[in-house]
Length: 163
Image (tube, rainbow, N blue to C red; front, top):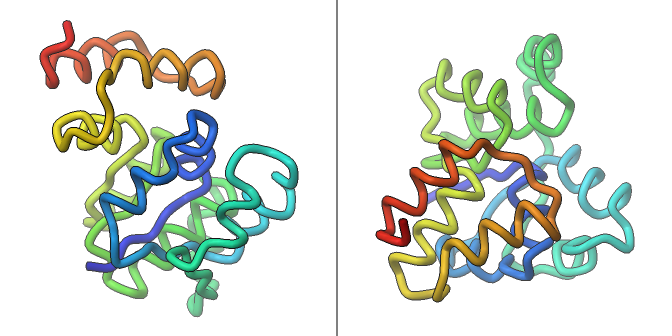
């Protein structure tokens, strides 16, 4: 299974010290485009996850071949999101890890299966990897400064019977 990730999922999971959940969910590893590596590792130097992602042997950086798709996507998305979607198409990824609404919408228009940070945490709760989804979502909002609506928060908690 090929999985491509955007920066937000890696940053979000790192901010709550749960990057290991991504590795457990995708033990074969994940791909990130160069723009995501720059955003997380270079621009994010000293922030949660930057060092772990740089030193990781399960996250592989891959160059996007078709820059035309990236250029088209840049009209509505940032560089990391555009490259992640383009790379996911190129490698026929089974899943793309994205959080931002516009990026998710663009990926779905291209028939890509999308999973975000909250979805990963729901999986982690169901798989017994974390004790409390509520605790992790609250940490994401607080410590991680992650933004998601109350409806998503409550829906996630209901799905794992914590609400």
